[in-house]
Picture (cartoon, helix red, strand yellow):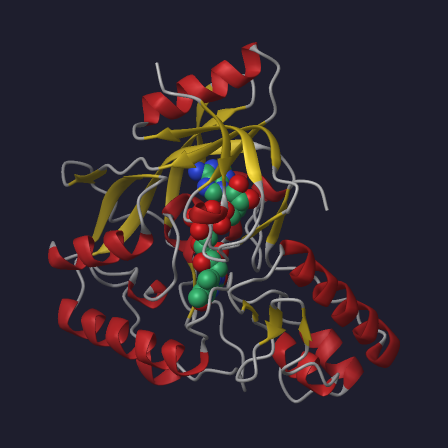
Amino acid sequence: MVDILKNIDLKQYTTYKIGGSADLFATAYTEDNLKYLVRYAYSNDIPFDIIGGGSNVLVSDKGIRGLTVKNATKEIIIHEDINVDNFDIKNLKSFYKEGSYMQFEDLEDNESDYNKVLVEVSSGLSLAYLINDTISKGLTGLQYFAGIPGTLGGAIFNNIHGGTRLIGNLLHSATIIDMEGNVSEVDYDFFKFGYDTSILHQKKYILLSLKLILFEGDTEKAKNIQREWIKRKHKIQPTLPSCGSVFKNISDEEKLEIGAPVNSAGWVIEQLGFKGFRIGGAEVYRNHANFIVNLGFAKSNDVKTIIEKIKEEALKKFNLELTLEIILKGDF
Ligand SMILES: Cc1cc2nc3c(=O)[nH]c(=O)nc-3n(C[C@H](O)[C@H](O)[C@H](O)COP(=O)(O)OP(=O)(O)OC[C@H]3O[C@@H](n4cnc5c(N)ncnc54)[C@H](O)[C@@H]3O)c2cc1C
């Protein structure tokens, strides 16, 4: 049994600090809690949704219907007994674009030749905790994702990018539950990972736990990458509430077509003259135009209206369809 509460304000569960209430709300502290809640929603015909750190979502001012679960599961198991040295790790350095807002080539460390270790992690564990904990146990590989808020589940959902890396490339396999409550084991190929996307954007499965391949790598180097990466991110990112980059960066083809010097969606938004543009309590961040910040009194609708205006102008001026990186939750 897990406590299910009514009309819980979701602001406190998102980094944006905006949005309405969940009709029903529960916190899952264990994977069994999570399974119970999915099955409870299914057997009572209630819509089910999940948030991890709430760092990539914009929750509607009207809230979310049905049951919203805050994922606070947090186990880590290091499987030293399972030999994964022959596991075919994907090309680690697969996400690098020239002329990005941030440079990180100098932080590159090819770890694929180190011994590999299988680490099983609950999907609700905070990524920051996981990075520190694994490095402290002599395991590297996650340092490129330092400074990114949220949980491992949210990170896999979107196949987050950090430095030259995509997190999906460290995935060995996962335990998932479908919306009818059936649990299964799936492998890397199941996820159909792409830039800021996975199969979970199209099909609703809930991640229970993830098995990652990490390395018995150089922990001093990893700590240095972690520190440097956070320092560089902090220089350009706002301290005001946000949910990170709002739009996905543009493709190489789009970059060519519009004659952009970089793939950055921030560059496009800046060219459209939106830096500092404000509606209600939401503003396009002046240092990095792909962030829309909450000045403290924003409504979700303010953010959504700015998003629509940017999309409209990008289409008009560049014939470019900008795609959202963030996930909208509830009715807009
Ligand atoms: C300041 C800041 C900096 C950021 N920097 C980066 C960056 O450098 N790179 C980057 O890629 N992103 C970045 N982000 C975006 C965000 O932090 C990541 O996408 C993060 O991994 C989201 O995790 P979360 O737990 O907060 O997910 P949430 O925001 O809670 O959820 C996001 C989506 O994942 C789904 N989801 C969450 N958990 C599960 C689960 N267990 N099973 C199935 N679905 C699930 C949710 O339903 C939702 O649709 C940044 C955000 C902020 C605020």
